[in-house]
Image (cartoon, helix red, strand yellow):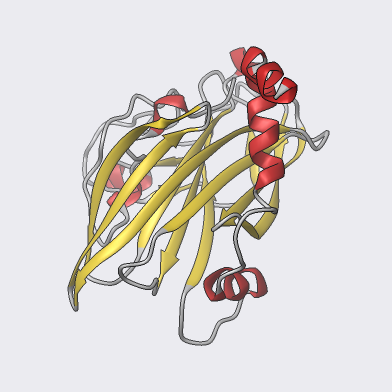
Length: 240
């Protein structure tokens, strides 16, 4: 009881307790085993893609594992889950890790797929790690039993992010299924380019989704992936 009281007084302790509990709760699912092993045979799978921003046409731009701190910049992560089991409740934690190994922030979602061939809907509830009774809900349409979750890491210079080797982790059903790294370079004033396909269409250059402030606006939904746009539950994104 004393530990719970202390955790209420220190919000950071709540996050630490949740992280410790991820590996203690529940049995490992077949999906999580497949994704951790990167099994490429037919069945549930996970693909993770990091990019600099998303164009107005929904194209992920600056895809890679090397990014630079800018006046206004972000790293966008997209987690593409495919061939999931309909009618089953899933949980996902999307976690960003500092160079020193400590956790910066996470997103927590619960979701379930329903529908039939060619017409699927993913019911997603984005939970508040400090108050699990609070949730932001959205429905993602798809032609297959799949969906994309996302998270945004604000790397703008005013956030004073530490250059170096960062990591992100993906937990499915409270089991670690993916851990990958990326590099964040020190601030540079040199422009990194505009939206290639937007320019070709005669549209003005823009910062896209690069501010990482998580305004919670929904984008177009296509194949359960929102055309690469950030999800409705992004208000608490981008870390402290």
